[in-house]
Length: 395
Ligand SMILES: Cc1ncc(COP(=O)(O)O)c(C=O)c1O
Image 1: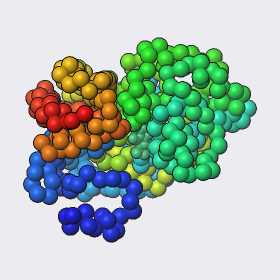
Image 2: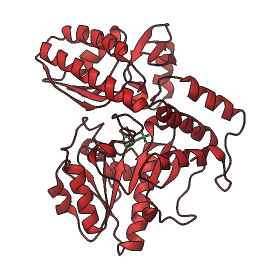
Image 3: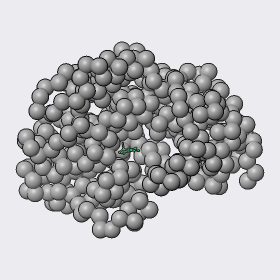
Image 4: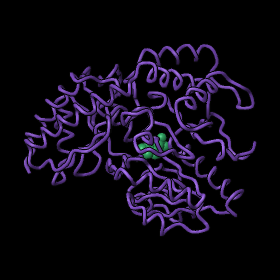
């Protein structure tokens, strides 16, 4: 055991089975461990490092802001927060933003906003319909929203007001809707739950149902947003507009931030009903503004589309070669590879041995979510390593 692994064992609360590597430095799509070993990073901090590690534009924005102003109370106006709110509104269908510190917190805020909407406009309706196999975060309420029994089971009693129904099934949403329903909350693509892509018409049907019932559609774009799926926001590909959208992960390319965005009609909070000490702080907003501006100015979504298609086509080649690879699916640079048996951990470790970081999505599936700025060369390199790793698997 290394020194750092011993310290973790002794001092850190055990919540995750770690991979035995201590990472100390990153640049672009590369990351290095404490022995100086280099890896190609197709995890990117769990789909967070959108511009890669320590992108100069983000590093400069943070360095400049850290020497200028880091934190004020939200009772004052600050420039990076408002620049970020403006660029997000001008490049989405939503009108206003509120900033917080994580994805879970953004979803909590979105549900609070929907409950206020229900209280004011829907006779006190408060229930939110979410999907099975979704993932909305780790607070108690977001655990109740997350439709995964294994995550809910350790924490009874969970907050009331959530109904988890089958994903990609409009009839299930219709059947769950009552006069207590204030919103439907969905990921456009279920990311943690398996990179599950809905039928083309599903989200449009959900939108139409919400319109018919006068209830809100909340899209959780925490993983799919900020270019990950080949458009700035995934909703653009499904021809729908949410009333509320949440963002986090790739928004500041590694600096922790979350956002609730909403259409004007849904912005029903009044002062004092929601807040956060650190939310929207100058430092995180400067990083997010620099990230979003760079992605827009440099048309990074076009790169995601092109390299993502090339990546998925290359993975299809491996599927032809290895009969235990049963599926390749994804959108842009959010991609999964599924196996006929539980070999994902062995493939992950073989990739690691050969210098590639990948994510185990399920015992029988891997997920790839590299930085959005990678090129075909990096895809070729990753494919070479993955090919080698798959060859070591004895089924
Ligand atoms: C779709 C989605 N929503 C919410 C979350 C929770 O975000 P965070 O871990 O920043 O709280 C995640 C994290 O994986 C996510 O993928």
